[in-house]
Length: 368
Image 1 (spheres, one colour):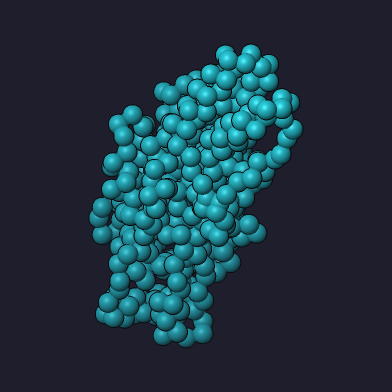
Image 2 (cartoon, one colour):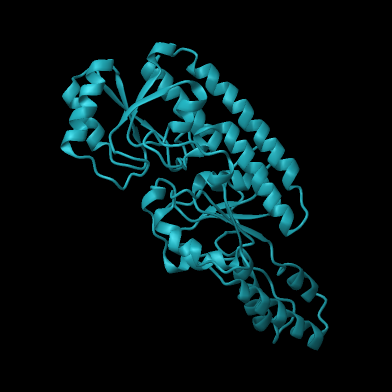
C-alpha cells in the first residue's frame, strides 16, 4: 500500500501458511537444531507476513493464515541465547538480532488499516481484522483472529457501533493493550434520526485528524516518526478533499440529492453540500431490514424529487436497490460505491484516497 509518508506492510488476516527461504547451515551436527531454531524464530517474527509481503496488496480470503503468539518470540529468543552461551557461535548474533519484537498495530477495518499504515510506515506492521469486501457491521472474528489482539501494541477501532460483531472481543482485550476508538474523537455528526454516525472516513479532513490521533497514541508507546508521517498523510487527505471538490463541481447545487443503500454518506453530504433524501435500509447499520411500506415511501420520495440514481454498496447485495429502481423505470440507475471496505486489486479503491476519489467520480457521473 503506497501512502503519503511511506507505509509499512499491511496485511488482511486471512488464513495462510509461510515457507521460508532455504539457507545453508554452517556446522554439521548442530546444523539441524540451528535450522529448526531459525525456522521457529522466522515463524514467530513473520506472524501473518510472508517474506514477499513488500507489495501493496491485501491477501485474498482464500489464502491460508498462521498466527504465532508473541510468547513464542520470547521462547525463540531464550533458546537462541542459551545456545549462543553454550556454543559461542558468532552466527547466533544474526539469529538473535532478527528475533526482536516489532511494533504491531491491529486495525479492525481495511479503511482504518490504511490510516494506521500511513502513520506506522516501515517502523512496524499493521494487521487488519475484517477482510476486504466484508461488511464491518456484520463481521465476527475467528478465535485465531481475536487472539492476535492480545499481542498488539495498539488496536485501532472505529467505535460508535460500527463493529457490532467485534464489540465483545474488543471489550475483552487485556488492559495492557492500548485501544484507540477514532470515531468518537473526530467531532461525530448525528444520523438524521438521531444517534452518532460512525462513518467519519467519508470526510477526508476528519481522516487526516484521525491519523494525527493514531500518531499520538503511538507516541505514548515509544518514540518514532509517527507525527511526521501522520502530518504527511493528513496533507494527502487535504489534497484529496480538493480533488473531490473538483470532481463534484459538475453537479449543480439543486441536484445534490442522494439516495443511498444505508446511512453511510452523512459525512460526505455534510462536507460537500449534499442532501440524503432517503435510504434503502433504514438507519445507520446494514443489519436492519426495510418494510414494504418504507420501500414504498422511498419510491414516492424519489418520484417527487426526480432523483436519477440509487447508490448501492460493494459490501452489500444490490437487490433491494434494484427493486426500488425497477419501480421507478429505466431512468433510475443503480451505482455501486465503496463504503465499509476498501477494494481489491484493480478496483480503483485499493487505498482510502483512491476509494474516496473513485466514489466522488461515480457520484459526479450519476448526478452531474
